[in-house]
Structures are given as structure tokens and as C-alpha cells.
Image (cartoon, rainbow, N blue to C red):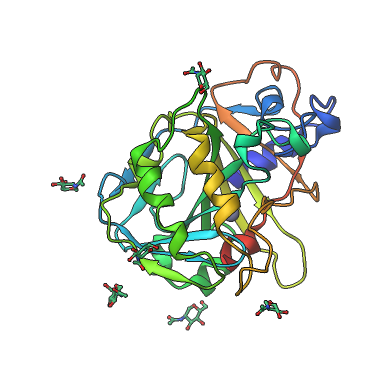
Length: 295
Ligand SMILES: *[C@@H]1O[C@H](CO)[C@@H](O)[C@H](O)[C@H]1NC(C)=O
Ligand SMILES: *[C@@H]1O[C@H](CO)[C@@H](O)[C@H](O)[C@H]1NC(C)=O
Ligand SMILES: *[C@@H]1O[C@H](CO)[C@@H](O)[C@H](O)[C@H]1NC(C)=O
Ligand SMILES: *[C@@H]1O[C@H](CO)[C@@H](O)[C@H](O)[C@H]1NC(C)=O
Ligand SMILES: *[C@@H]1O[C@H](CO)[C@@H](O)[C@H](O)[C@H]1NC(C)=O
Ligand SMILES: *[C@@H]1O[C@H](CO)[C@@H](O)[C@H](O)[C@H]1NC(C)=O
Ligand SMILES: [Zn+2]
């Protein structure tokens, strides 16, 4: 279905680019998500998702410092269906990118063109691959990523939301690369995603074209950010290190390196997005499929 969207779109010669010469990116004001609504094409097939066990508070197994991200492994049975995905996908893990500067420095939104201090990515594999990541990678839609922006809560709130307070309490246990501990607290994915309208999202197929890594990932990026208090966001950039001792750097600036490498199409709900009614923009973009698998 998503391939069809791409094929149909490429039949139209791109006549105008709405944002930064047609480039889509995350952390440059000229092409970040504020501009996406003007370039995304409407797609009525982008229906709601069904999330299985996202409300279950005992699905998080372990939390690990991978050196690149903080990763939480999920138990089996956590799934996502719908959302124009071809079948059920198993939610395997989620991880966090970002934290460029401590939010408490008050330089939150525009430093380095970064509007959001962090992103949460849920990595899902097509259920029919039965957990065989080798065959999932070989399938052009074998992996699906759900991307959420994380934004600092306005005001002086601290330790909020409670689920994020609990999750970040584990960072002190994984300050060094490869450290990992079991999650013993009751936390659900729904609690971590609180406040996000999960019916509103962008969809694109991302590819990476470096050697040995040419798989595609079906990307879903939700429009609403998750709101987390500044003190908790700051824990990520002040607690976890990228290597095996505390003299190594703190884990900051681990966003995906988005570069335009290919012509893909971004879609969102509806017939046409505002501003896109007469323009079929061909967008250059890339998503780090390999990074998804490495972390
Ligand atoms: C976790 O979920 C179970 C089952 O729904 C519920 O009984 C329990 O109160 C929840 N625990 C917490 C801490 O929310
Ligand atoms: C996983 O899939 C690959 C490629 O399809 C296959 O060669 C391999 O035998 C599978 N592994 C298992 C454990 O089933
Ligand atoms: C936040 O805290 C500062 C100083 O502690 C105070 O002046 C300000 O009124 C507080 N703002 C809100 C919205 O509570
Ligand atoms: C995490 O660290 C805290 C304090 O540093 C300690 O009390 C707790 O036992 C640790 N938890 C695990 C699972 O290692
Ligand atoms: C972590 O959980 C696994 C699986 O439940 C268990 O086998 C292991 O003993 C636990 N590790 C610790 C340190 O509690
Ligand atoms: C910390 O690790 C780095 C390599 O990761 C190493 O070069 C350095 O000697 C280590 N420092 C200490 C104090 O162990
Ligand atoms: Zn990621």
C-alpha cells in the first residue's frame, strides 16, 4: 500500500517544493516538522492504529545503555496493527535519541535547529517473521518505527509524568555503556505516550543506502509531542555516558542524522493536506534503518 503511494506520487512531476527545496528533516527550522503539514500528501488509507498490551504495566523487561541510546526491551505479545500497516507488527523495543543541551539552561527549542530535545522510537517487526530479524531486514516493510517527539513541559513542573519519573529513575543504574538492569516497576507504554493523539501522524518509507544496509523501514511520526518535565529530560543528558567509564562523554546529540538521499513521499491523514492541494512534492529523506537495528 505504501509502495503504491510512492509510485502514484512519482507519476506526478514535482512542480513546486514547499519546504527547503523539497527536503524533509527533523532539526532544521527550514524543513522540520513545522513545515511538514504543507508538504505531506493526503492519504485516506492512513487509519487509526490498534495497540495491543500498550496499557499493560508489566511489558518492559530491561533498560540498557547501548552507548548510542537508552533502550528498553519489551516482552512478547506487545503489538501494533492498523495504521495502513499490512499486518500485525510486534513491538520489540523502544529507545531514546537526543538531549542536545540541558533544558534547564533555558535554550530548549532553537539550539542547533532542534525544536524538540528528544525523540522516542518504538521498533516493530512484522509478526510473520516470528522474531527472525534477519528475514525482517530482508523484507522492505519488515520493520516499522513509531516516532514520537518529546517536548519540555511548560512551567515549573518536576518529576512528571509519573511514568517518566519512574523510567528515568533507572538511568542512575545504567550510567555506563552496556550496563542494563531489569525493570521491576509497573510502567505501561500508554503512560509514557500520554497526551499524544495517536490518530494523527505522518507516514513515509525511509531507506538507508550505505553498504550492507539498504533495508527500508515504514516510518510513522506522530504529530503531537510527549510532554515531559525539564528535570527528567535533563537526566538523559547529564547521567548516561557513551562508553565504559565516566571519563567518556555524556550521551548527547544522538539524533538521527537525516540527509536527503532519495525521492520519497510523506503522507498524512485526509484527502489533501493544507497547502498541498495542487502540488505533489517529491521529498528527499532518509531514515536510519541501520541505527534502529544497531541500538
Ligand atoms: C498494573 O496493572 C494491574 C493490572 O491491570 C493493576 O492491577 C495494577 O494496579 C497496576 N499497577 C500499577 C502500579 O499501576
Ligand atoms: C531467519 O531467516 C533467515 C532468512 O530468511 C533464514 O535463513 C534463517 O534460517 C532464519 N532463522 C531462523 C532461526 O529461523
Ligand atoms: C516558576 O518558578 C519561578 C521561580 O521559582 C517563579 O518565579 C515562577 O512564578 C514559577 N512559575 C510558575 C508558572 O509557577
Ligand atoms: C539502581 O540504583 C539504585 C541506587 O543507585 C539502587 O538502590 C538500586 O538497587 C539499583 N537497581 C538495580 C536494579 O540495580
Ligand atoms: C532479570 O530478569 C530475568 C528474567 O526475569 C531473571 O532471570 C534475572 O535473574 C533478573 N536479573 C536480576 C539481576 O534480577
Ligand atoms: C576510559 O575509557 C577509555 C576508552 O573508552 C580509555 O581510553 C581510558 O583510559 C579509560 N579511563 C579510565 C580512567 O579508565
Ligand atoms: Zn531510533
